[in-house]
Length: 174
Image (cartoon, rainbow, N blue to C red; front, side):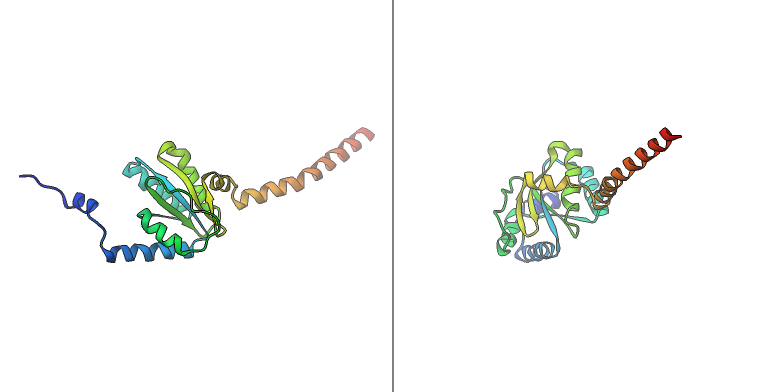
């Protein structure tokens, strides 16, 4: 006798109207509450890799949600974002957070780690649609603490040179 597991059947069954409504409400809440959103294409990730990525994102305060693209597009079409929605090809998820840079930066980290399996395909930044290259540029912006330390070093550099010059003058006179 041929037996199919219920899990495999559920995978190919249509989503009920009630479940679609729940997913739409969830996506609406995510989009309304997030400061920035990254559209993530993922393909061929093993369960362990997906789990590790979700855990890593969660530790950095970044949420990750997989949903049907048609449902995502329905919610996004109701919003008034500037620009044009990037093409969402393949399996797409959204990474989101309350930090403007963290979702892009953290997804970019996993993009480098998982090479061809994870990629940034676009996003929403400051209420504007961004394409993949623009989101990658945003992802490369260092964290605030690093920027602050770079700024302090920039200010400190001329002061150090003056002190070194004065020290050499003092040694030369002695």
